[in-house]
Length: 201
Image (cartoon, rainbow, N blue to C red; front, side):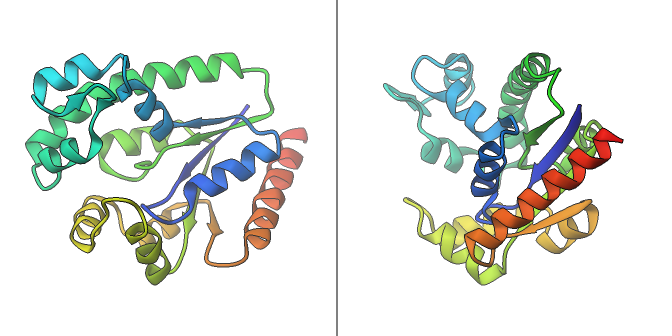
């Protein structure tokens, strides 16, 4: 099995590229989606997050905007949240890999693949790293179109993430999304074909 580590900064189009891998029949583990599930109403992490961050949850589970205000720009609080989230996501990822162990390749969609010690450790567990990239102006436009987004929040998030130009240098492959979707899909399809050919040798 080839493990593809897919990453990219906020607003770069990583979710769209994940969807393209799925269209091509490649199973995708989406770390962000898993966190959303764990933090939704009835999610396994809701009690622990409420206990550590009182007032951050409600009938629908974790209120991500409220929680974000509690941790952004506060390294100690962010680390406390990560200590709650990361072990649960790791267990989910291991279950995903076990389910798909007979597949030729899988994608591990990991937003912070190149960030911090935990991310760098994850990077060593994948066979191929892929970063999704777009021009900075397009990234900003996409992010600011989201509900509750602001330029200040984008700056905070960028500060926490490895800059795009460094991710491009570290990755084995770069998928561009600052172009037509058909061009991005063609790049994803070519990458899958290339990796499949290598696996078949």
